Image 1: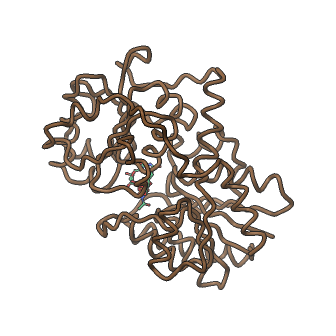
Image 2: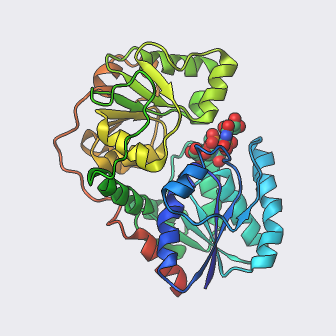
Amino acid sequence: MKVLSVVGARPQLVKLAPIAAAFAETEHQHVIVHTGQHYDADLSDVFFTGLGIPDPDVHLGVGSGSHGVQTGSVLSAMDPVLEREQPDWVLVYGDTNSTLAGAVAAVKQHIRVAHLEAGLRSFNRRMPEEHNRVLTDHAADLLLCPTEEAMRHVANEGLAERSVLVGDVMVDVCMKVRDDVLAGAGIRPELPAGIDPDQPYLLATLHRAENTDDPERLAGMLEALASLPVPVALLAHPRLVSRAEKFGLKLTQGALHSGRPLPYAGMVAAVLGSAGVVTDSGGLQKEAYLLGRPCTTLRPETEWPETLVDGWNHLVPEPQSFADFTSLATRAAPAAERGAPYGDGQAARRVVDVLGKS
Ligand code: UD1
């Protein structure tokens, strides 16, 4: 079997790591295509080196652009690659523009598509990710779902026959890296200047278009974070940096100290070292949950509702006008045990197995 993975953005590289490792244990051929949606070393290269992912076989180099330009560029650049490679499966990951373009390119050439992390829904039609994941699920031949909830969503949309519950590959990678960090592999995260790693701090990220692209909303969120009574390490995505510059907003102010995004192991170490997480990232909400740190999510909804159980995660769409934001963001970890809604850490092996048998 020959499987061609299409990746392009940071969270896809994290998911690719356990998949590439699982393929390496088999005779199957695995081809990696990097679309180039993310091109900064902080968002791309460090994930290949840090997570031991083989270099991409093909790099499309599409870069940034409007949704139409970015999606269209990947779509047209994929044509010759698929004609040449003729894979048995195209495997697409998550919900980015690279995901949708990879799926559509394959469908047009009658190549079977498998969607990893299928069935997630925010039901918020304003999110570009929601369009990408719904359209990709309906184009795909095989829906690889991470949770029971995702299975229910695809069943409600008439896609049950094409779906399989495999668990979440993020558990595979997160638990492995956590064990390395705890085993004292010497991983010290480079936290922003002004953050003392030996004193309590909160870890924050903010990158969603809904939060970063409106100047008033972004200013309000930054002020709310800056007024917290604990130092806040803000790991700034380039999108946040560019919007803050454009709107004349300071990313370092009050309690807020901004620095560069971290490689994956550094991120896991930074979560483990923190008192809690404040974020609008899907991946980080789940990493906080898996690593046992309370999370406050700056969005009106989440695709990972399992994290909300027992208060491990709380949704705060408007921290600037939410009176209890301070006590919520600085709350202690709940005493309740967490279940294992995201699987057993063997999802990637299951994915390879299901592809081989389908
Ligand atoms: C994309 C995904 C989002 C995912 C996120 C993870 C879509 C629609 N969104 O959002 O689901 O959560 O990746 O990070 O696909 N930029 C750089 N360097 C880079 C990449 C981006 O400076 O290497 C800047 C550019 O100003 C660019 C902006 O970030 O215009 C947005 O990049 P883009 O790839 O369009 O989306 P993300 O916000 O990263």
